[in-house]
Amino acid sequence: MATLSLKPSQRFRLPDWHTNAQLLSTNAELKRDASHQIRQEARVLRNDTNNQTIWDEHDNRTRLAERVDTVNRWKEMLDKCLTDLDAEIDALTQMKESAEQNLQAKNLPLDVAIECLTLRDSRRDIDVVKDPVEEELHKEVEVIDATKKALQQKISQSFEKLCLLQEVRQQLNSDHRGKVETLDIDRGCLSLNLKSPNISLKINPTRVPDGSSTLQQWDEFSRFNKNRAEAEMKEATELREAIALTIAETNNELEAQRVATEFAFRKRLREMEKAYSELKWQEKNRSLCSLQTLEEIAELQEDIQHLEEDLRRKLLNLKLCHTRLESRTYRPNVELCRDQAQYGLTDEVHQLEATIAALKQKLAQAQDALDALYKHLARLQADIACKANSMLLDTKCMDIRRKLTVPAEKFTPEVDTFTRTTNRTMSPLKSCQLELA
Image (cartoon, rainbow, N blue to C red; front, side):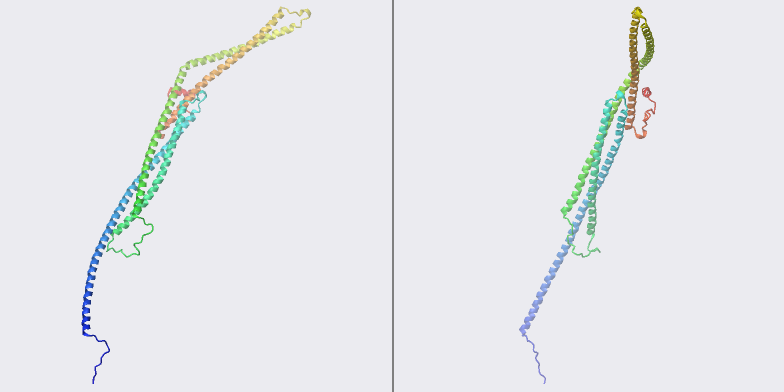
């Protein structure tokens, strides 16, 4: 016979069952409400995060665009600054070369002035004077030395300024390259979007790289470079103006001194030509005087010969008297008396001795007069030659100074440097000067 077996499990009451069912229904309702709440919150979060992400991406894209504009604006300013800096460097280099050419050009007037001073040292005797020409030539040398020092100082300043400009240009160029690289990077970042193939997650992208600067430091760095470049360009412009002014002033001073020196030369030459004209006017008288002097010399020489002949004759007469007197000393005894013949011979001896002394004195005076005539004639000829030499030297100096106004390829000396002969037809006055020289 079958039996009912009971499992050894807990038995719940019916109210517990109903309570459990009610609890399950209530829990299900709560879970559904919670799930619904979560779904709503998730939707809100999605909307909020999507909007936030969209706006963040939009804001950052705007910031990137603004940053690109800012960097590009600085790049354009640096471009303009570099262009202006290159132009200023070229202008200052050209001005420096112009100053160097002017400095080199000062060697010619210095050589000419020194050559003129050297030539004028060849003057002789009384013509070696410290005249206004020599003073102006020395002053010209001093002016040239001063102008060369001033130009050399400006050249040194321009060289130093060019070094500073090159340094500033290098710094600006480095800053400009940085701006160009930054623009390429930021424009690349600006062109990226969600569909770009080269986007990926990076390791610690929010890190601050070493050497980073703040926005203020970045702006101050570029502004400092720009302001320094503008300040250096301003100083370079002022230096160029100062160099141009120095070149103009030195050229004007040198030209004024050249005019003053040549005026002194012309004035001195006029004085010498006037003196030469007076000598020319007196030339006939001097020629007549020279002829008379030569005639006087000839007559004096003839008179000297006559004096010497008379002196020889007087010596013979004196010998005769001495012989007579000596012979009469041998008269015997009382015959040795001082008679009229004895007194006459004695008087004749004294007279002859006085005559011989007078003739000797006159002969010495005649020799002295002859020597004086020769010396005076030589002095006249030396004075004429000296004046002619001085005029020729100053004429040569004026010819050399033509180098200062005539181009080198067109310059032809009018007076040969070594033989001092003319290379063209000269005035009768200058021809006469050369003949006298």
